[in-house]
Length: 345
Image (cartoon, rainbow, N blue to C red):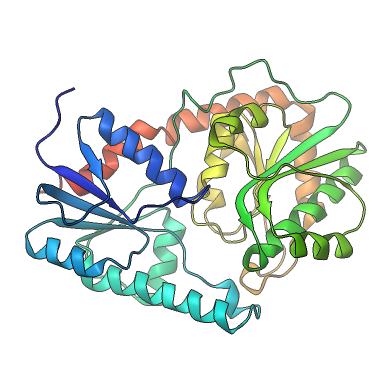
């Protein structure tokens, strides 16, 4: 395909394992397939539009580009909040609040258009920081449906239940996610009457891991570490269920990747999860407390709701894949971003 006139800048450069880093790589590839030159330098003279993924400190260059007539779009996920409910140290508090201020300033004074990852995220920003004069769009994350697919020889084990959790990093600010996963696995073992293997695919802070094991002893837990993106489909096809561990997630890529692989997702009704997991693609149950206060959720209810999925797994696998094909196709997502970046007038 011939290159389009002008280019698109994605800033900042994100090298993290999951979340925004995964999104940036996928969107860059999709835009390049459409003939656009994609880079990370807002000062390039032929730049037509800049997509700020969350926030960046290069606001001086971006404001200079804005004065040249370059369109500025900001993509927002959630707001740093756990430090307001749980003391994580002064340095963490300051870093989290400075991050929030940078995001909020960019949203209010720099962006020509804002993309929220979910309706939940939109409402969260509007409730905490007020409405904004810039127009906005809600665009859910998506995946390459060819790369993430149920097609493959891998199958779940027959002699036990395998539940997986896929995150980038688990440390003190999202530590409740790890503990909740352990407690859910133990509850599922009781409800299903079968042994449960909990596979944690994440970079887990050793001190957090030890702390959780002291509070939730026993159980069969495998720590797989950080999994390369291309290995996630192989891993997902070997699991029975994926537990969505994050509390108040904005739009977790790991959930969408699981659905695309035909892996049913279970979790609690917090954040955007009910927007993503619908019909027979999994089960989402009431939290059973206040997630904003980091209350312990109702593990037993989720475990009971998970048992019917295990009894008719193929049906739920097909439903998960069908939902991904309908709602979370990368090409559709890329077209939506182009609409905000280039075809906006």
